[in-house]
Length: 153
Ligand SMILES: C[S@@+](CC[C@H](N)C(=O)[O-])C[C@H]1O[C@@H](n2cnc3c(N)ncnc32)[C@H](O)[C@@H]1O
Image 1 (cartoon, helix red, strand yellow):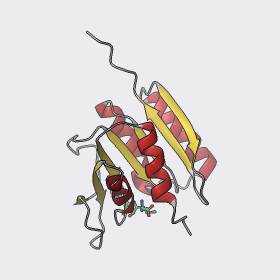
Image 2 (cartoon, protein in one colour; image 1 turned 135 degrees about the vertical axis):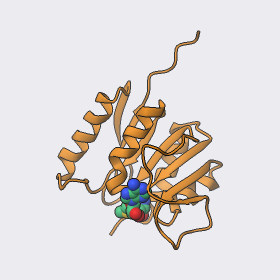
Image 3 (cartoon, helix red, strand yellow; image 1 turned 90 degrees about the vertical axis):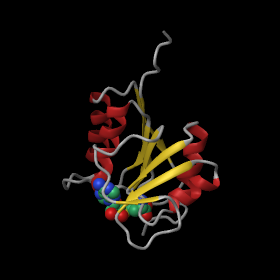
């Protein structure tokens, strides 16, 4: 059973770490992370396929690499099959990401999956890749990637 505090804990982490006003919440389920981030002043779009969801800005479709970029940050809580897409999408658009991985998309156990995702992010060109732990039960490791700052011209 996933920890019910996960949305508030992750939202607190996100706002303490990133100034991004617009956030893509990928694989957001019912939209509870969206709700928590909206309460903290962020403009959030949740991507998932649920018919029943909270009254938040909700794109009821799978998130893909083709999604037009309308955010400064991409996040995902336990996004299962969308985990790699979050990292690849953020890399494509030069955005930071923060993801709390859960199940892998290929049967890989948790620890190798975490190492694989960190390597994926490094290979995709993120200048800073780090792991942070949320104070909650269950899968609580946050993988964060930040692109290199753009040099002033
Ligand atoms: C374990 S649930 C987690 C939901 C929510 N983030 C939470 O913590 O309760 C995984 C979710 O990923 C969604 N998902 C998987 N691949 C997706 C994709 N490409 N685009 C959007 N949602 C996706 C599923 O529909 C499901 O709701």
